[in-house]
Each structure stands twice: as structure tokens, then as C-alpha cells.
Amino acid sequence: MKTIKGADYPELSCNAYWLDGLAIDCGPLTHFPHEPELILLTHGHYDHCGGVRSRALLHEADWDVKWLNEQFRNFERPSQIGRLRKKNFEWVDWFLKVIETPGHTPGSVCFFDEEKRVLFSGDTLFADGFGRTDLNGGNPEKMAESLELVESLNWKTLYPGHGPAMHR
Ligand SMILES: [Zn+2]
Image 1 (cartoon, rainbow, N blue to C red):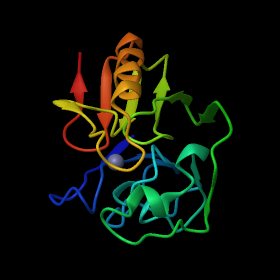
Image 2: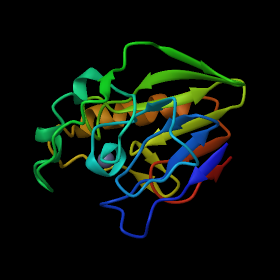
Image 3: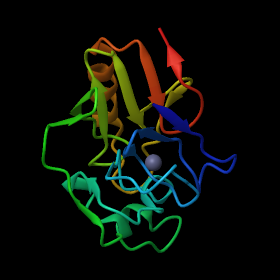
Image 4: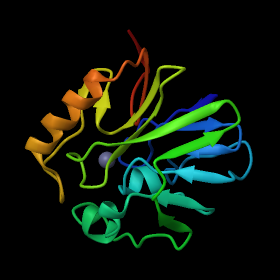
């Protein structure tokens, strides 16, 4: 696995993750080693899906990306994005479970590999805090529930959508 670090300008670029052909998130400044087979999106914000040029999946509750992003920019959902319907993704030696974690956006999800105890948390949880809930679709009560759920997972490594990884 390879971390593709976000630029210093977080509004334009998230951390993306490269799992040998499967990617997690794709900001407008993200460059993968080659075109991904599939991109799993943690949510519909521009800095996480604005670079999508190949097949990607987004939770249905974040389908209206125009509305989710309108406080920042005019952004239409790229046509390559389809609906995230599966609950699990198997890829090489990864087995990623989709964990629904609304709060930052209605369709925010985390991806969790139970065996590796690795959690890709998008903008739900960071090493030093959690995602904001004051943007369109944000919900502080749901965020509190989602953070409790994420806390209860047995992860030992956190790969967040911004900032450094965390180990516990
Ligand atoms: Zn976000």
C-alpha cells in the first residue's frame, strides 16, 4: 500500500491511498502510479473526488455533490462515478468492509480491513480530531454516533483523508 499525500492546500487535495490498482479517494491534485481499476470514495467533497477520471464508487447519500460542495465551488459529479452498493471489496490481499459513518456528509463511509486492522477514515476521523459538520449535509449528532462506531472498531492503523496516519 502506498499513501499519496495531499498537498499543503487541503481544500484542493486529500490523502489518497493506492492499493495496487485499487484506490481510495482521488482529489484534483492526486496522481496515481497508473490508472486505477477502481476508486472507492469516502465522500463527495471536491478535494476527495474532484480528480476522478476512471471508474469510482460513491455512497448514494452523497449523490448530490453539487449541493455538498456549493459553499466552496461549482462542481458537477464526474460521470465515471457510480453508486457504492456493495458492503465489501476484496482486492489482492485486502478485504475492505464499508462502514457507514454519516456526519461530515450524509454519505461518508470508512473502509476497514478487519484482519489487517487498518481503517481508511476519510474526513470522519483524523489523527488530531474529526471532520467538520457545519457544511451542507453535515450533522453533529450523526457524527458523534459515527465516531463512537469508529472508536469501537479494532483498528490499529488509521489512514485519514488529511494529515498523518495514526497507530494505536
Ligand atoms: Zn470532506
